[in-house]
Amino acid sequence: MSQLKKIFFVFGTRPEAIKMAPAVKELKTHKKNFMVKVCVSAQHREMLDQVLEIFNIKPDYDLNLMKKGQSLEHITSKCLLGFTEIFKKDRPDLILVHGDTTTSFAAALSAFYQRIPVGHVEAGLRSFDLNNPYPEEANRLLTDRLCDLFFAPTYLSKQNLLTEGIPKDKIYITGNTVIDALFMAIKKKRSFENPELKKFFNNKQNTHNARLVLVTAHRRENFGKPLEDIFLALKEIADKYEDVKIIYPVHMNPNVLIAANRILSNHKKIHLIPPVNYLDLINLMKMSYLIITDSGGIQEEAPALGKPVLVLRKVTERPEGVKAGTVKIVGTNRQKIFNSIKELLENNKAYNAMAKARNPYGDGKAGARIAQAIKYYFSLSNTKPIDYH
Image (tube, rainbow, N blue to C red; front, side, top):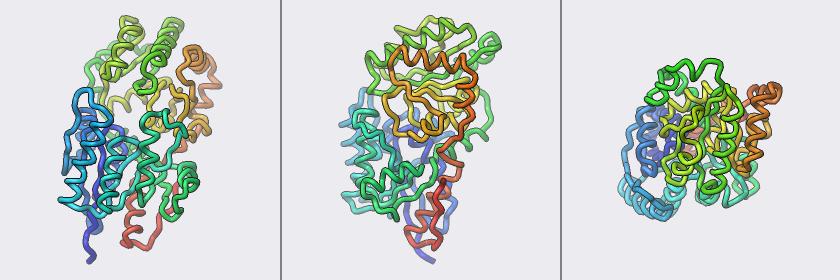
């Protein structure tokens, strides 16, 4: 019997944890091939812990580096030094990082310095603008330059990698693990945990003949006037449509929190609440009429639930949703945001075209494809995984 291959999953934020959980769970079922360990930076402490609890994942290593007002330099340096110490002490055969976070880039760099192979889950996404999103576009570019295995979620992300000179035999199209996680979460039927959401939905006046608009907005590049314009457009919508109720889980960053409270608080149809956990967010998406966001993952999740998505960015690294018709980029111009929401509220044909479009991001089997690709990489299987299309 061949020796077990030691696989480290390395992540630090809530979105990473959500998208890595299905792969962690899948690889742990291959007990004859893999010894799986989880290493977290805790770049986001509380939000990360919520996801770890939901998916019953206990880290083997925890850098616990988050501090108030942390900078990108703090995260990068602490991750680089912390992961290096761990990798030297307990050397893995492969580390897996995810997406575009500072944790992922620093972990990949640490592994590269230690001559440890790196696999990149959600590789190949590109906005082709280093400042949008910031610093994520640079993080994913830098991470991909350090990797040995590339798990591209879509055909387009594979083409991006090929254009950059990545050998095709190192790239596997897996679908996005976020869809795996979504399907796992939907099975966990439960009521809202957030007390403010419980109160909101227990009041029938809030939900009777109402159309719920879910908002998430927190991106660094939108701080300042772009966020203010977003909030002013939302306020105009709430004033114009009697049946519209807006729920906005507000990020705790003062750049977001202060502006949101100044412009949107005390409006009877706009409900500002603290950040919600993953399962509450899934429930909110399911109950929403449409979703307005500057998030990345929601662009992939919401279409799987049949919800139109308006993206508060100049560009998106997920153009597949735009092409499929599930997602529309509206930027941060106040009038454009207002008009785009107005169209979906008043034009049933436009709404249905987005709501019924095919989700291009996955079938819930990405984790299994990743496991098979890693087995093939280590010659533990002669069966090469079939790309997701």
